[in-house]
Image (cartoon, rainbow, N blue to C red; front, side, top):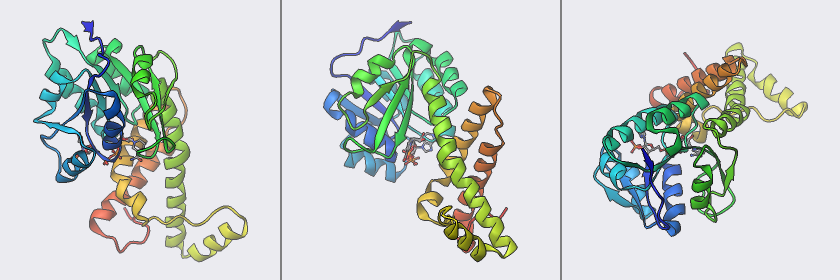
Length: 280
Ligand SMILES: NC(=O)c1ccc[n+]([C@@H]2O[C@H](COP(=O)([O-])OP(=O)(O)OC[C@H]3O[C@@H](n4cnc5c(N)ncnc54)[C@H](OP(=O)(O)O)[C@@H]3O)[C@@H](O)[C@H]2O)c1
C-alpha cells in the first residue's frame, strides 16, 4: 500500500473535536488546506466546539477518511481502537492511505495494534502532554513511528510543538502512560486516602496532619475538573495498566486508579451528595 504523499497544504481530518481535538484542529488551520471533522454521531457540544474553532464539517467518518491526507485521532482512550477500525473500513480498497496520527492516551500495544490495522508505515504514535492549547505554552506533542518526522513538520510552529521520540510505534504512548501514572494515578491514590479517612471519621485529623507536615492539601474529590473528566480517565488508567504489565511492572496502581475514577464518574451521574464520590 503506497504511502500517500502529503501535499504542502494537506486536508487534515480531526476525529473528534472534543476540548483537545478542537484545539488541535484550530492549531493546524494555518498549515492545512482545510481542517475537517465528521458530524455523524457527535453531540451538539462537539458541533459547537467545531464551529467555534472554524473547522469544516463533513457528513461522517467515511467521508472524512476518503478526503483527508492526514487524520488526527483525539478521542477518549477507550474509543481509540474503534475509531481506527472505522477509518480502516472507510479506506478499504483504496490505493493510498492518509497519515494517521493516533494522539490518544493509549498503551504501546494499542497503538501497535492500530499500526497492524492501518499499516505501521502510515501510523504515527502521538502523545499530547498538557492542556488544550490555543497558543504555544500549555502543551507538547510527543511523536514516534516511521512517519514521526513528517507529522512533526506539520505541527512545527503550532501551539502543539512536536518532539520526536524515535522511529518505533509505542514509544510516545509509553511516555504518556508513565506521565499519566505520575499525575492521574497519584491523584486517585490521594482521593482514595481521603475517602478512607472520611469513612473512619478521621478526615479533619488527616487534613491537619497533611498541613502540619507540609504533605499538601487534602484533595477535593468533588472538584468539578476531576469529576467532569473522570469517565475519560477510566480508560486512560486501564491503558496505563496495560503499558506497565507489558514491561513487567506492577499494574495494580493504575487498575485501582481506574476504579477510583469509575466510581467518581458514576457518583457524578447519580449521587453528588457523597462528598468524595467514591462509594462503591
Ligand atoms: N483535555 C485534556 O486536558 C487532554 C490533555 C492531554 C491529552 N488529552 C487527550 O485527548 C483525548 C480527548 O480528550 P478531550 O479532552 O478532547 O475529551 P472530550 O472533550 O471529552 O472530547 C472527546 C471527543 O471524542 C468524542 N467521543 C466521545 N465518545 C466517543 C466514542 N466512543 N468514540 C468516538 N468519539 C467519541 C466526543 O464526541 P461527543 O461528545 O460529541 O460524542 C468528543 O468530540 C484523550 O485521548 C486525552 O487523553 C486530553
